[in-house]
Image (cartoon, rainbow, N blue to C red; front, side, top):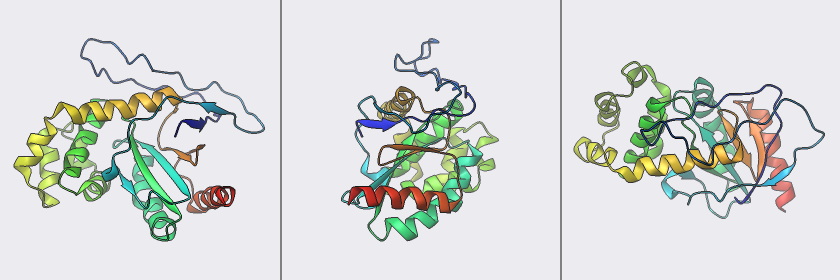
Length: 227
């Protein structure tokens, strides 16, 4: 999406930027969250050009009338709530009926452990198992967060998912995967995403692991506007 609506949030959020470059530098696209305040309707702003969508990190038809971009961090407990409670309902009711397409964007603002988990999930994607691995990270975060997202802990998750662990380790070491995670993060920073989970529903910003009824309202409104 080349355009995105950025809501002014009621409280300011501080994004802890990951040191991707190992020298203390931060990406030039980093943006501070919107200041406190309220508006009658959110402005629609021209955002940065998004990285190419990774097909493996999507659910649903590219022809679906509604696209929901999900910005999330694997260490975020509210993201885990969305992934394990709201997302399955959305898949059943909207993705499988052809109305909705989900597009995942990594937003690992909670640190290097989140980056490593995101890289691991993309390594699983190379074996066609992105969503199972993604779910496993959220269902049992203690299995890897307690060990600082060590390679060993992430490989154990891969083994339990039935992946080829030798290939998984090799893919995790591929710099291209870390670069892809960084590109997603830079994109979210450029949009001013204040925290996770955050969503763009046909370009309109929507924040938090809201009740499923709120997601339904937003999706159905977007669908009506797309008709």
